[in-house]
Image 1: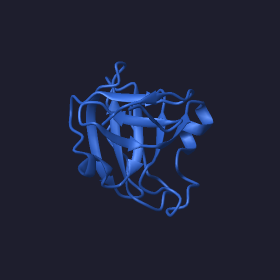
Image 2: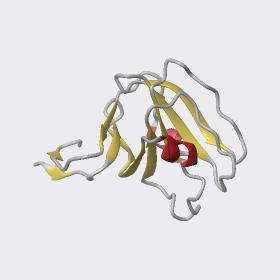
Image 3: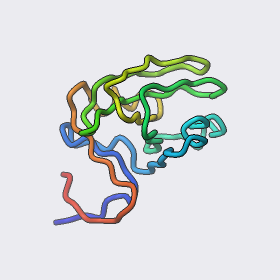
Image 4: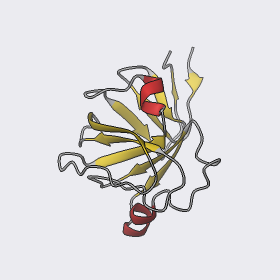
Length: 132
């Protein structure tokens, strides 16, 4: 039976796990620069995420909570992971990444996400699917 899926999401197809069911997109210069800086720690809870496009690396300057960063290539395959990046840090730059998913801390561990996993991202349409 098909079930409705979230309107904006990041889904790890390899692990059959949602990384984010409330996904926002940062794709302008300003939204990429600001990222999650003004986000309240309680508002960025399990299921939330920010997809930064294009992006080769992230920072947590002026942020108030740790995040996980999932670096994706052009095919949305995981090419690098940074877990629980504390506030006021600069994560590595990975030139082969074309985008980065910022997720609440411990999301990578909780979902079993590893290098090579394929991530499905939906940001502009509603559809039904059976992801098990």
